Length: 107
Picture 1 (cartoon, rainbow, N blue to C red):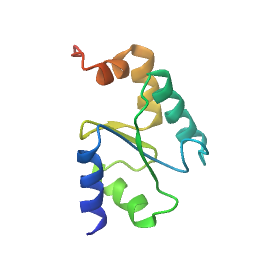
Picture 2: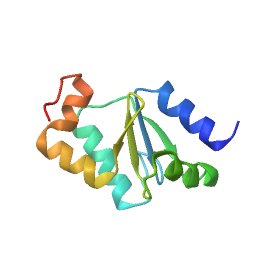
Picture 3: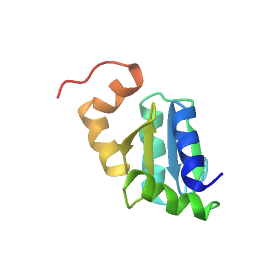
Picture 4: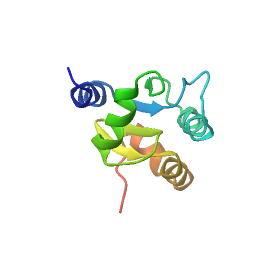
């Protein structure tokens, strides 16, 4: 299975997926630490995380998968949400919490 197939399987097989540097317990960059904190603040307990530092093919592949150049990357219900900055903005506006509760957002 190539990296793109593995990523697709991970993203579609888990409700919340975070590609990050390090682990939730030991994030290896500030942006990944921020992403984990935001998910905790939203009350998300079940997160499938992928440490891209341990999987170089995933580290490159995820950038191509979402056409997004940076890590971390958050996926909810198979959809790309964004990186750390977007997560923070969505959290501050209340939009991110709605993704996890299933409420419809108005745009």
